[in-house]
Every structure is written in structure tokens, then in C-alpha cells.
Image (cartoon, rainbow over the protein chains, first blue to last red):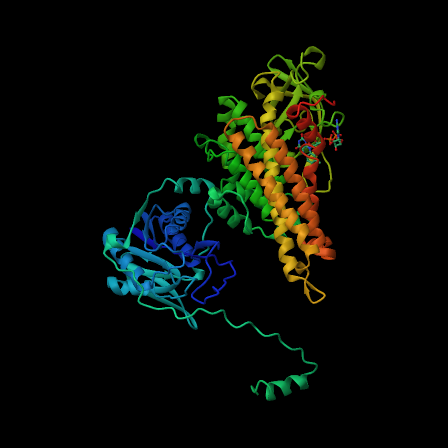
Length: 253
Length: 387
Ligand SMILES: Cc1cc2nc3c(=O)[nH]c(=O)nc-3n(C[C@H](O)[C@H](O)[C@H](O)COP(=O)(O)OP(=O)(O)OC[C@H]3O[C@@H](n4cnc5c(N)ncnc54)[C@H](O)[C@@H]3O)c2cc1C
């Protein structure tokens, strides 16, 4: 089985995000970018399937700016076999919308014919949580979102999903799209020999035009703002004062 | 923090940072306080192939140069760790790779690459001769197919966490050689064949948590295959190792320097006294800005030394200058950091006092600042020999 893993280059989770002065987006100049953490979990799961003999080949795909090459190299250094970069934007600030990404992925999948797509449940930059679902709809494939456990059986996948209030176990027919959640695994860090090997692994570069997909935006961002700063708290002197404030100031009791 | 370092190795740095992040400050603090060896950390670095960076691919390593090796050392120190626990393998590697026989390489390199063997120790310094290396008194006398070693060494690090040691000893008496740098030889000693069988080890408790020792040789027998290269040329061979060592130490100091500046600037932005962050005062800013400029400048010389070493060009001057400039820059950064932290800098839990002690070493070892200055004065500026 071939496993396809889409990976997105996003602002690193350790970076303190700053909103641009003109409120059009987030400042990405000179900011550390990394692989979306959920996608790292997806790559890790694909590698584990390969190590367990359940997958033969892992193809990583990224859609975005040229620099997403580095993200793909990271996936290759972790253990993916080859990579496809679809250069769909020149400006690092351009975010390709989920529907366009899903259409491009569908086109890649039509060519590659993987048996399984493992993707992150969402990208930590815009938190859309939509691409996997849209892709399943476009392909007409089964989908299982928010996976915290994955078992591949004959022609089907048993997926444990993290849902409100507990865990749900479902069985889906393959081929399938599985979007992964935080607790599925702990991704490995790349070893030095694997980083060196990754430099020699194939990385194809394409454009949306190669797949006949229009990536122009359908959504307009009106404004990006920082959340309001948290106000300082107050210290109360006694239980009586606390109760008084809860009653009269906060109005909660 | 932004630096002027070239970004060609960012992929290596990122992977190293991910590994180092699994060993947080508390880990290094505990080993620092206990004077114990950070075994798990060194094993993780070995398993991920970092300590085999310089071993050629045919022997199971990654075939990289001193530049990359120095980045490994830099990142360890920059993450709050102490590369002193494992840098021996990198600087010894230069000696073995450039001067070891094919047989020696085949025998040891693959096992060093997997981590089955460690080559962490190099025995040069002696108690009575110190920096005056060519006068060292340890002798290796050829008897049949063996060399018999007698003498004493001091400050020999990582012996208890290494399997192999490079030993410098005199094979022809000083009175019988034309130049004092002749007649010295190096040997690759298998420590399990030596300890208790003619070689004794006595640990030296010290200020920086190094596992370092006195060694006593009493008729230690070494098979003649342990000789590296030709007899009598050991001093020349070991110089390659020393240039690598100095450049690696420079990189460690650079890592320390950035660590201190990172720590200090974060603290200065956060700590409020007199109703504002202390970092708003130029009296606090300037020492840190100056220290940063110093580390950046030293880093340029470090990369130049690496470039020359990797291109097999003369790099003695650059390696020595890089080591001196970087050690001074990291010390200045350490001092500025400690001052910025005020009283809290002295508390173990901020790690500043530990790193402060650790980085101070590098103005003395592996070669002291005065000796670098006299090298520059004599060999580069052509002034009269002072000693
Ligand atoms: C923690 C630690 C680990 C070490 N690990 C190793 C190791 O693994 N292997 C190894 O071989 N060695 C090791 N060393 C030894 C180290 O390389 C030496 O300490 C260093 O080279 C200085 O030699 P010395 O201590 O004998 O000082 P000395 O040579 O006695 O010098 C003392 C001081 O006098 C100054 N001085 C001496 N001569 C002159 C001169 N002519 N002009 C001006 N100033 C002069 C020096 O600069 C120095 O400041 C280690 C040392 C330490 C502290």
C-alpha cells in the first residue's frame, strides 16, 4: 500500500505570533517556520505503518511557497520516500484555502493512487480543520477524523476517534482519508544519517496549472486582530469580600 | 535570536535542537550538581548519528566535515548542555582519519559509528611539563613487537566513559633528536586492555563537572599495531587533532555565548525593578549588546577555521584565534548575564552559575590564552621566540 501524507509549512508553534500593524494578517517576516505539528504526527504514523510492513511507500505532498521544500525535506528525513511540492504562491503570507488544497490533493491522488491518506486534523496557523473532510468528499472516499489510534486490517481501517466526551471506534473501508489528532503518537526527530539521505531522495516540483486547478481565493479576510490583553486580577481580603464581589460585581451568584 | 551564521546548516540545527529539547535544563542541572556523566544524553546523540558526523560513509558515519561537527558542539552548549562530555570524539576523529592506517580505520570506525565503541580521550598534558608539550616525560620504548610505556599524565578527560584513548609519548629521547618536536609518537590505546594492566586512573574532582583524571603508566605494554602513523612523527599528527579541538571549543564557546545572551535578554525584559523592566536601562542593555557583538565576531573566525580545516589548508592561526576570541566572548557574555540576573544568577536553578563556571574553562584548556598570544606573536608576526 502507498500512503500519501500532505504536510503544511506553518509558523513554528514556539513563536510568539504578532499581528501586522495594518491588521491584514500575521507577521511572517524572519519568523521560524516548521512542519505543522499534526502533520508530523501523520508522517510518523505512516512511517510506523511502513515499519510494520503495512505500507510500502510514503509520499509527502506540500502545497504553498517554494520554501515548503524544507518542510518536505524534514518529512523525507523522518522517513518518507519521496516528495511532491506544488508551488502555489510566491508570498509567504499567502494562505491557500482548504478547497483549493483539497482539489490539488485530489489531482495528485488520481495520479498516485494511494491506499491511505494520513493528514493532520488541522493546521495550527489558521485552524481551519477542513481540508481532509473536503478531500474525502471530492474523492468520494471514507473518512475518519481526529484519530488517536489506527489499525489497518484487510481492506479496512479501525480508527479510534477523539470526540467530545470520549473515544469513538469506527471501521472505515479503504481507501480512506484519516485525519490525525495529538495523541496518536510521538513523532521521532530525524537522525543525522537520515537527514543526509533525505537530501538525495526525489522531490518533484509542480504548479497548480499542471493539475488544472484554480487556487485563487474565494474567501476575503476582513481583519486580523490580537485577542484582548488579559486584565490584571485583584486580591480579595476575605471570603466575605469575595462573595460580595461575585454577587455584585461579576453578577454570577 | 538572530545571528550572522550562514544558514546552510539550518536543517542540522533544527534536528539537533529537537533532540536537545528532550533534555531540558533540569537534566543538565542535575548532572552538573552531582558531577555525574549525562549518559542518556550522550547515548541519544550517538544513536541519532551526531557523534559519527565526521566518520566517512563507508564506515557507517555521515562523512561530514569539521564545520558540521562544530555545529553539533555549538548546539549542545546553546541548548544549556555541556559538550565537554563528548567533544573528544570529534577532535580525536581528525587524528584517526588523517593518520590512522586502513586496518585501524576498518577495525574501529564502524564500531565508533554505531556507538559500540567511544573514542573520547586524548592524553597529552603532564603534571611536570604542562603546556611545554614537547618536553613531556612519558616514554614508550620499543621491545620486540610491543611498546612499553612509563610515565604520568594529568587532566585526561572522559577515560571512564571511553573505550579508546589517543596517547602521546616520547619514543626517541629528547637528547637524540634534531628538533624537540621529533621523536614523539601517538598510540591508539584500548582502555580495557590497559586499565589495571599497567595503567592506573585517579579521578580529579573539579570545578566544571568534567570527568577528568590522573593517569599513571607502569610498564604498560602496547602492541605495535597501536602506533598511529610513523614512529617519531606523532607531534605533527596530533597538531591536526589540536586544530580541530580548538575550533570545536570555539564553537562550544559560541553556543555558550548565545545561551548567555538569550537568557539574559529574556530576563532583562521580564524582571521589573523601579516600576520598569531592568532591560530598559542602558546600563543593563549595553554589556549585553557588547557581548553579543563579541560572540558574533568570534563566530566568523570560527567558521573560517572550519572552512580551512575542511579544505585541508593551514588553519593553525585561525583555529587558535577562533578559540581565543570565542572563549573571551563567551566569558564576557557569561559575566554580563550573571550581572543581569543579579542575586538570582547565583541560584543553581537558573543555570547561569553552572554555565559561568563551565565556559571559564576554555580560557585555560585545551590551551591557555597566553600560549595562543605567544603563537601569534612568534609565528604570525615574526617576533622573537619568548620560550
Ligand atoms: C577540566 C580540564 C580538562 C582537561 N582535559 C584534558 C585532556 O582531555 N587531555 C589533555 O591532554 N589535557 C587536558 N587538560 C589539560 C589542559 O590542556 C591544560 O591544563 C592546559 O593546556 C594548561 O596546561 P597546565 O595546566 O599545565 O598549565 P601551565 O602550563 O602550568 O600554565 C599555567 C599558566 O601559566 C601560563 N604560562 C605558561 N607558560 C607561559 C609562557 N611561556 N608565557 C606566558 N604564560 C605562560 C599559562 O598560560 C597558564 O595560564 C584539561 C584541563 C582541564 C582543566
